[in-house]
Image (cartoon, rainbow, N blue to C red):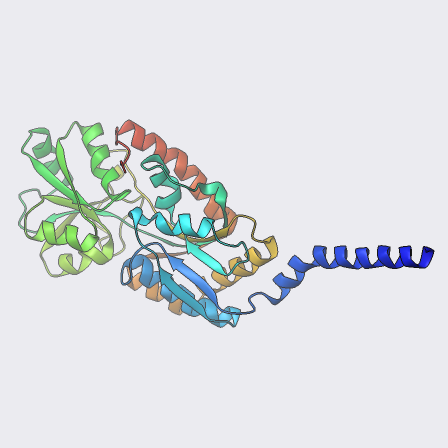
Length: 323
């Protein structure tokens, strides 16, 4: 009886030991097969192209294929909602951007929050600029604001937040009056400006720089915290007297509960990829500023942004999106 009992205890100890060690073993061999990287916007857009460039470099480091998939919809929030529900094993990586966790929760009722993810790293930063037609009578930001204050019925076109926050904040701080028209993509907003359906837009470098170089558009201000390297003489909104800055970042996350060792493997691979000068050059050409933010650094930016954007949205009295 004693021998039988000892065998049972030994068997139980072995089973418990295996159970405890399984996550560690899995992390040591991770990844054992291909990994999915899910983009929250459509194929061909800036976020998609930048993510695919990152994935191509990361798969060389990880030694396994990274299959990029697109799950656009609901202003970029469909992918985070999907990723949050997946098995926490590191094989489903989501592009969880600043806007989807720091901005959109203030504007939409979502099924996820920042706490539903283990963040891997931040790998890029967007820039935003206020642009008008080259033949617009508004030569400066001050000209544009003066016309809007006179109630000349100025229309501005943007996609979603944070682009629209720049003009909403100008409306609030300067007492200007703009009419907002929403577009599904930066390309649509640019087309509307070129065809003079709107007077001003707020978009990213890939959307407007080709038209600025062609002499069709003019940028009045950088809406980002920094000037654009392509247009170093164009001042930021803040430099022109208004305390307004909009920002957004690209980052990766996996579902909450993913083992820390696996998150670390993915974090190291992302940061190593971003140290590749060729990848940084490719992203810069796309109009995305390359970044190498650790998981903690990226999370700190998101948490700070959630508070700041919440205050800005409340101050601008932007209503929640219904439906």
